Length: 416
Image (cartoon, rainbow, N blue to C red; front, side, top):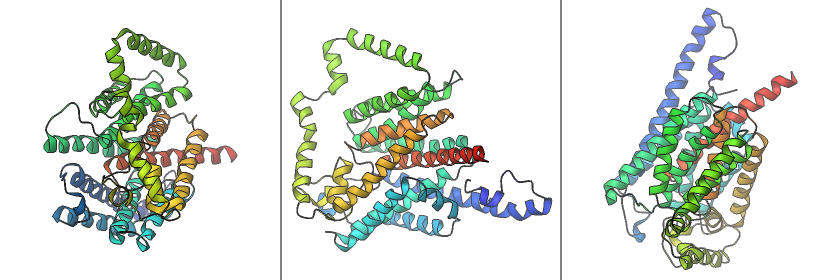
């Protein structure tokens, strides 16, 4: 049962006066949904287009752009507060996402012991508000097809706006070397590439175009983690798709092309332009993670405060811990690691449990989420400050909720 059913009573014959009674609430619900979407886009536009670079000591400074961002978050919370939430809360309660929101509540509570209490509180509340809004917008779709359209309304504006923002900041380049941008592109490209694999012979022209554009952005991101995450997501899809012959053909073509090119080209494909010693050191990440692990011994149970790891902990200032595990460990300690770990484990079980769902976008969604989960080992899409990549990942989780609900309804119908 989707949220819209609470006001439209889908599938139930209505008398004329009953239809009139439900028309106004249905219209109000749709209006509220699209107001939420507009606010999501305002937050996205602020973070994608109006990118600014500040010194490390000013990370918590509140300027005009920050005030706009805070205002948008507050409006989202108010709008959600006055929205019908019963079905939405039930879906969250019955899915892996309950652990994700418990983690965010823990993050907000970490303001009590955080190095920077106000910053930790705001970042946790922001992540909670944006996550709830995006999930509410995507999961309230009445059908999987509508859910797919809604995540496209999240992923493409986010990806393209981020690209435009980067062009305005650093100029046009086909070698961006940005993990966050690569993560958004990977989620997008993997979703449509997997959809093509399970398309069952139907016309996939639109999906092919979107997969190609997404893969183009994956490549120009020059993010090795994104490259390999995309491959992992496609392989995840290939394992469960029924079109095994297509998989074999693709592997044979890929292997032939790979061994046919020059050795220098193969090295670029495998390790980008990194030296092997830097690759073994994970391009500085290993140094960061060593610092975080050492620092965590000072506050092992509850950490230094939500979103504090990259900003305040260790010997180097960054904007991202580059690993969801360390984001949780340094931010909210082993308690946070346990809660976030339960989220990922529960999500993995859900993806495996419903892997044979027949809608082609289902396996595409699962494959993109699998790619995103792997990518969190290089850039913390979740776990700390909410990012543009987190927007797309959470949108896919919203579609995931739609499919879970559809599957549960089918199981109930079989039992009846």
